[in-house]
Amino acid sequence: PLQNVAGAPAMSVPLAWSAGGLPIGIHFSAPVGEERRLLELAYELEQAQPWAARRPGVNAG
Image 1 (cartoon, rainbow, N blue to C red):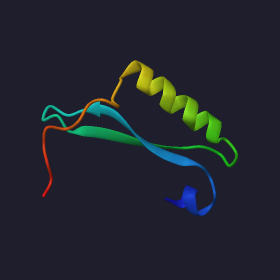
Image 2 (image 1 turned 135 degrees about the horizontal axis):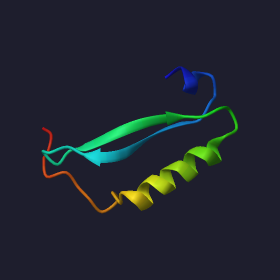
Image 3 (image 1 turned 90 degrees about the vertical axis):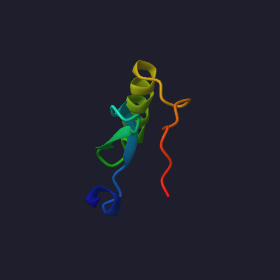
């Protein structure tokens, strides 16, 4: 994304799960120097919807 080329922080995080059990992600960006804002947002999202221990039941390949 253009934000990365410009040096602005950006991150993609899991947000929900599809009916088929696959993760659905969302991409966030923030102004230059606002990395903390993104990390705090990711922390709050994980607290509301824990995802770290979940694994999709589908394998690509």
